[in-house]
Length: 461
Ligand SMILES: [Mn+2]
Image 1 (cartoon, helix red, strand yellow):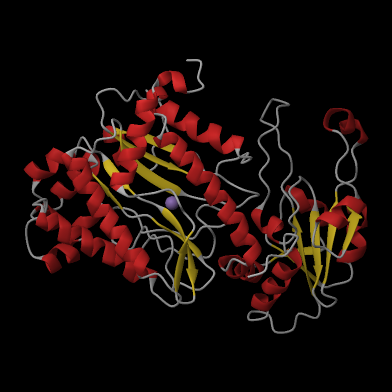
Image 2 (cartoon, rainbow, N blue to C red):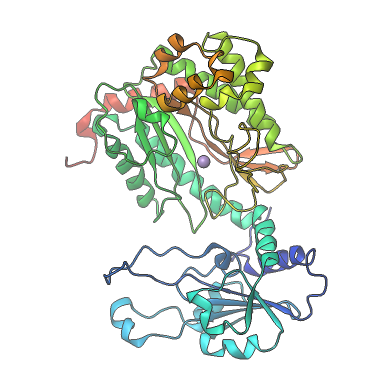
């Protein structure tokens, strides 16, 4: 797979048009016009918010600065980037912005102009499709129209990653691998969940990743049972388990990885039992990933494995099929097996159905057949969340299968999730995540870090 030298904006525009054609047959009077995010400040303050480029705009431009616009002339197959005009008052503070010549060199566009010329392009076509009418494009409100079909075409196009995007995602994944390894190796200076958080971000930043794909989830003990725990501020003392869900971003492309480990390097009995159940759920579902496979089915397979294992160790009691039908496994595995990954951590095009009558499928964010070029997370989990267990015990259809006295033994573990980023290929998959999830190897890494002692690490407090 050869990788283009520039972010392939032009090819992206062509892909979008190929999907748009399935909705609008005659595009001869149409163009596409998208706008960048603006640099916003916090309310009542002149401090700028961290800049985050609008993803659809980036997809068609590769331009990562505020206030640009992109125009795709479908008839002429011509992509034009419009730069904001230079604000000379700002040059003193921010330096000179990228100029026309530099932008033409850097981006995969046919022409670079300033935004005072936009009108003369928009008047050429009856329909200049955009995704939203908002502050960034309100000046041209009379020339542009919001289009659901364009949204659809952009989503379908973003669904399948090209070689350039995959290369960016591999870089994000590599930074994430190193940062997870650093976290597992630094227990002498990790006495609070916040230290786990700090260690991950420090190592991501050092590798050039300026942003995280999402706020890291760094939990210990029972907190591991809270799916999107972001408090990240409790002491680790007395606790034995850690769960960290964190992924670095690279040039607007995400990674999303979860690892669990024992704080002292030695898995306690219950923690390892749960870990091995989740490991089996992940190994078996990953092994079935390939073009053409139903993601629903892999998700349900993960539930079946959980039920099988819970019956073996006495956490469930009853008939396998009846347990599956009751949905009681969602008390312990409440989220989906995984989601699409791309510029957004929960990437576009998954078509979830949050009203699905089948509770097992309700929170699955990807509801379509896997296709070559998709990147998905495979992230089964098993949690012992007292609130959810209570709900299960109140539900007469589910309570009869739960062996409460056995479940109680696992509350201290909190939960285990193992999450890798997987590229779907024609006849299988490629796992972009390299950090080990083997429990013995993890144990060795944690112990080796502990053996180095506190003085080995760069830390002040
Ligand atoms: Mn995820």
